Amino acid sequence: MTTDPISVDEVDPVEAYRLLESHRNAALVDVRSRAEWAFVGMPDLSTIGKPVLPVEWIRFPDMAPNPTFVDELLQDLGAAQPERVFFICRSGQRSMAAAHAVSAETAEKGRPVYCTNVMEGFEGGLDAEGHRGTLNGWKARGLPWRQN
Image (cartoon, rainbow, N blue to C red):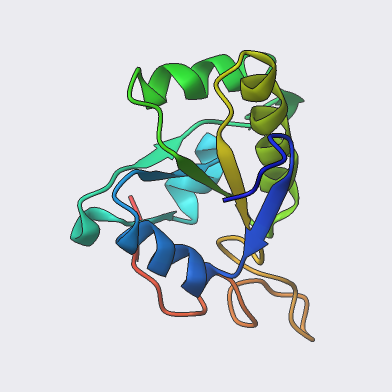
């Protein structure tokens, strides 16, 4: 575990899943928009007995920053705050920003959380044809996911 309460590390999706599976006190937060959860799908941790916490970092449909993101997340996490929280978005950019925000605010409140960004995100980077979901990311690496 990191000793700097406002540092955020990164792992690839396969390592994130392995760590979520092996750490009893860890959580996954999907920071994408409601539209992405509904139309693209979400990671599925049901086989390892964990929920995925959906909290929009940027709200759909106006795509404005969610000013209550950290408070919403902390409420969803409850009093038994996990030791480590993983953050995922489409490609790893929004989730990194969200992880830094949570790390800084929880450290400021005296309840630091070890935050980890899932690099590559759920859909991964753009391939040669400009499409996501084939090159890398949670889905392309064959990790469990579901679509509503």
